Image (cartoon, rainbow, N blue to C red; front, side):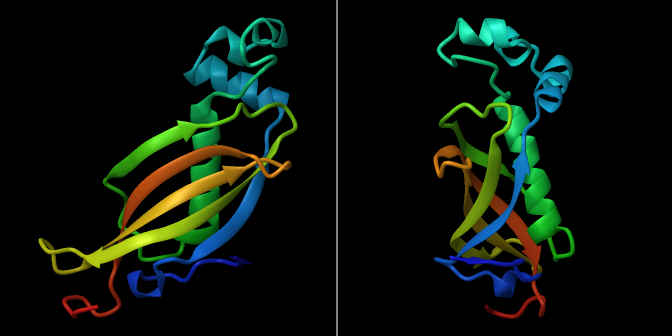
Length: 157
């Protein structure tokens, strides 16, 4: 697995490849601020409540983790590509809690790809995101499909 920026068009994605992207470190302020705005469950808001739950302490919202990972994905891989968006995410799994001070790195595995049958331009790239904390533990997995423009629209790839 190499660490680099992914290339920019559908044709550049290789089935079976894995690309390690950058990382994000979660602060207490970010975890609480995100929770206050988007997921105000008590164990995302205070250490005391978090300690009384199965989390054993303050834990970032899974949506906070997903948001940080999509930011990495766009910044490192999709931002200057032929990306045409995504029809959605599947199988989101929050495996382990993300805590204050955790640094989470994203790796994207290319599972499959195909040219759209119904439209002349996009190719569909199926990926699995794996987010690991600084201990190497998987904290999040997501299966995704994304649309990318072809270099030669309408050509068989």
